[in-house]
Image 1: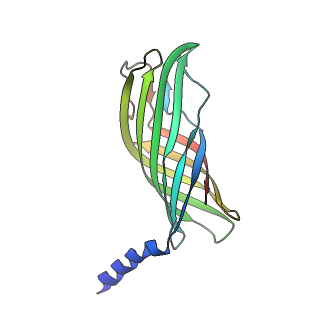
Image 2: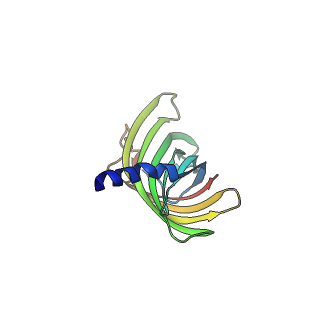
Length: 185
């Protein structure tokens, strides 16, 4: 009898959820790759994408993001390697405090997909994906019609998530840090 009451209570939680959508964007604090000594990252580093959130009772919430990154590495003025990356973090958030500005912590799994090409050739040569775990902390600031949430995210991957076919230009890092700002309605 107790198990069935608990199961009914768990099934009723989504009925009390508040759903919101929005956009998250930011900048990487650390590079996703270690590049060969003569290659450098071109400075159009950013991440952006839609976000979906379910605010649950007891100060909990669940977020799902689809964050796009465009990364390009060059050797001087010569064409280099262009990679694109999609991150798909699913995070459980716990908010502290009651109203106004609320600090939060978050954690959950993340999945990504890479693809890229040598800029001298139109042929895509890299397709790779991996999984990891992401941790975040920030502030949830409630405005009149939206929520504004700056946060710091640290991601750790269980294995290299990018294979350079040449083996010398790029090597992916297992840890990455991002500064992100979200707007949800």
